[in-house]
Image (cartoon, rainbow, N blue to C red; front, side, top):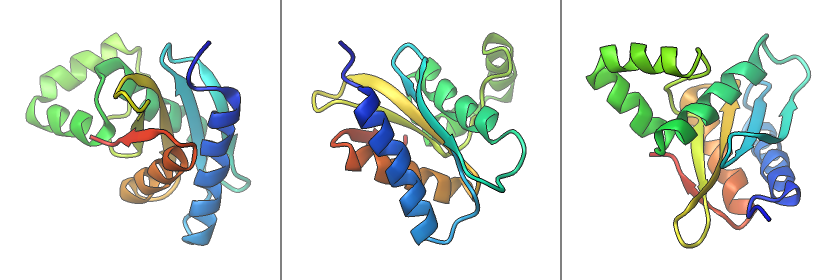
Length: 143
């Protein structure tokens, strides 16, 4: 049985949404993936911009594929742009290398999934993701 249950994923999503509303962020898209990169839960708010699901998914998927949080992914891509272009190809374009992708870890530090958040600034997206993961009693790694 996966440590990232549907119940925990739903807590992540609902907390991300509440944190975003309380912070007056723009409408959000949130995608929670398990360690296999399967969607466990997601929500796209009313009046959000087009493709929020795809962007949030790409943030989470990139973190899982690299095994590091979104900030570290972005840093690596900025340091080695050719590597970034190669990764975009390897990920079939499902790779958004910016903050807002946050690894989900268990108490032992094992990666059990990732959340991708998209809708406001990357910093705000990341803050919402971290709040959701912590509310589910899990460990957030934004890189």
